[in-house]
Image (cartoon, rainbow, N blue to C red; front, side, top):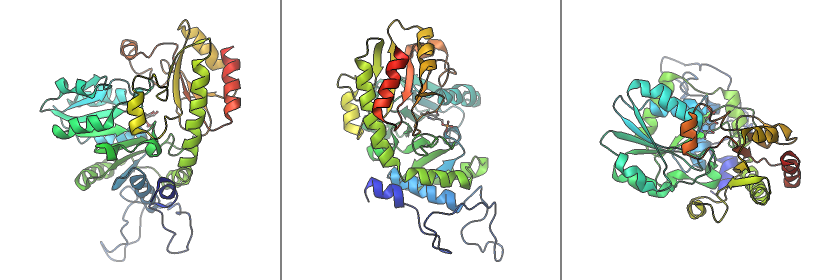
Length: 379
Ligand SMILES: Cc1ncc(COP(=O)(O)O)c(C=O)c1O
């Protein structure tokens, strides 16, 4: 099945009792058993729920995996993955990443004896000196957040495989419509489902998708033991959102291209970070592994003053100043004080995240209106 068909049909069956075409919201905590252990495959909704199961199967199909697991947030999904590790284990991560991921690594799991290394992975071989017998996980975001670097998933996958290290990719920015890391050698894909997958800024959720059964079982054991699962109503909303993922992503990417081209020619804009530019340092890798270049764009202002960035952010009329991304509406944000405030300034500056950097999540509105909004805000 091709992507659009899978988005609408994969994992979803009409309700056998009624024929309802939409997967019902199974708002139940438990399931009746005929005799102890004699049930229909569902015992308790922390462990399994039919609405959640439909979504997990749909996500597994979209990422070309075999098993999906949903969580109450993207961070809960990362938390579950990290609980596979033991004291003394080491993780090598991209150095430009979502602030909350950096925070859970450095402030939560480092307390339990896990060591984290942060490295620019634009040249995948740069991770080689950090690999030791203790390395248990390689973690990459691509495009990176918020600098929009592209990491070569296939090259990293080969390194991870040759060293027998688990390799996970946060695919939140790209979505499986643009790239499928499991096909390129990743062992595990993570999503903040909150973003493009849900797509309508009305749900917080996370997911892990894998091919390997043993890995899926180990993660499901932690998912059930720790219990950070989403409710059925949220699963229903995401199932509904995903039915238009391909249409939304096409428009996000088209509008992203239009806005990036507009910004690069604007006299008040200094740098524009978007992997679709031919002179973007990782453009060729992006072209190789992504279908289009996405709707996330970061840019800095001439003079690089934080006051100017704040003034622009306060002046938008259509772009909404808010945390998050990937919804139908265009959002803008100031990573240094918002999404990435939990990363120390010295670390932010190392990856080029300057105080005037503005991040846009370009929505699916009319591109002309978005350009006009940028024009008046920059003026
Ligand atoms: C790339 C990325 N990964 C993970 C997360 C965390 O996901 P959630 O907010 O759903 O917990 C976010 C949230 O912004 C994100 O942007």
